[in-house]
Image (cartoon, rainbow over all chains, first blue to last red):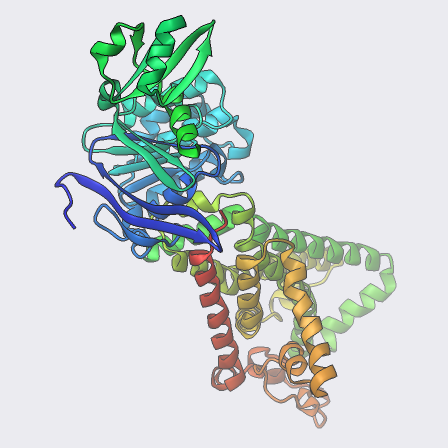
Amino acid sequence: METAMNSLMSARGVSKHFGKVCAVDNVSFDIEKGKIVGLIGPNGAGKTTLLKAVLGLTECEGELSVLGLDPFRRRKELMQNICFIADVAVLPRWIRVCQLLDFVETTHPNFSRDKAELLLAKTKVDSRRDARVRELSKGMVAQLHLAIIAAIDARLLVLDEPTLGLDIIFRKEFYANLLSDYFDEERTILVTTHQVEEIENILTDIMFINEGRIILDASMDSLGEDYVELLASGEKADRARAIGPIAERDVFGKKVMLFEKPDRARLEQLGELHTPSVADLFVAKVKGAAA
Amino acid sequence: MIGHQLALIKREIWEHRSIYVTPIAIAVVVSLVSLAGMVTVSAFDKEVNIALFGAANIAGDAERQAALTVFFLGTSWVFLFALAILTTFYSLDSLYAERKDKSILFWRSLPITDAETVISKLLTAVFVLPLFTVAAIIATHLVNLVITTGWVMVKGGNAAHLVWGSVSLFDNWVAALVVTVASAIWMSPFIGWFLFVSAFTKRSPLLMAFMPLIIVPIVEWIFFRSKIFASAVFGRGEMIPLFREMDIEHFFDEDRMQVNKEAVSLLAHIDIGKFLLSPSVWVGVVVCGLFATAAIYVRRYRDDS
């Protein structure tokens, strides 16, 4: 198996079955160092199962290597270099903020207490060191969790719906802090979320997963070249339809068509061209896969 | 490794405050009860004076020591009984609560193995809980000695002689420590079983833990007409192989018409060698280890998604 020098994670034929149900179906991909990869899929697509396999929380078939380690067999070593936020709810509700910091400090070799204190000082949690997690608001819990994660010198950060249930202000702040406090070219982020619009401008790469399979694995830069959205109407729309769009929808009486590997010169004559949003591309791909 | 264990055990104490709150509460109640007792007896002035006179002039050191030791023993059993209940609930909760509130995902995101986590919970149940109980027993003894001292002094007795001169603190405390920790080790197969149940059950760990203990003996009796399981499980509650054979005559020296001083020592009745050499102790430890291993396996391989 050949892996690139910068490869941080590689999957070859990874599958996971629950009884007869196949949650992840023969998936292969590579993730390089320094990327922010969005793993996007509808509910039940296998996102969480795939992330659990990556984190060594569940056993899977096929070859999976994260930081050069088999995640399930060598979870302890792996966790020294991986951080993981599953959902804002997972911090134990009974623990006090100061106890949490003490505990992570003694158990995590790559945790910097100073950095965590510095990051917390910028948040509302700062004045509530003696409060229990259950006494904090959901947004404050997310801030606390991110501060802890950002203070760990880890090579991979896995986020599974990290902003679920937070209001828009906290969500924006969360991703802004993620970029400023955590991310640099030595680090890699793998993130899943339903709110694609909020993260599409920070992603470098994107993977779509549906019914356990990866239906798109591309860099954000290549999306603009490989996909184009055409806004057309009337007879021009009919001509465009003949070229074979992968999706079509109505907007204010006009047709919006999505083309893969487009012949730009030809389409330009038929109407306005746009780069499609990740959300639209996702819907088109999932529907296309279902058809 | 040891640093991790200390941090993990500290975490257990943070999470389960009942580990120290329960013994403290019992210590307070026991002290209040004995205080109330002394206040009540004080109403009988004449009798109290006779008793004090008797304690000071007729009874010897051994009798006074026996009286205080019996009092200490009485209070210690309350603590041991509470410890049994506390340990049961602690072990049943220890691997269940983290799954119920999903914090297991956070704990498992740290570089700590499942084995380290389960071992920390086992150590907490077998050693940390008993140690807190012993500390509370000692504190209760001291508080009660102080209360008694005050009372004896108010009544005009010589407390230094009657109370402090008669008590063998070291003997009582070491005995309390040995009995408490040995009881926890003796009962460790149950602790292992509770940990295992709390690792696998999806609901009601208490019910899941005790149902088999009731159903299995019944099934065994119906099909095999035997009581092997019942006697193995419930037999353990009966006699811990820690004490020497009791000889009631040994307590009282009939020739001299007084209590034998050596017989009052609690430690003199404890035989640690007998405990350590007892096969049933070690069978229990092995059973506990097997259940704990199963709990580690379940925590590691189970997938709740």
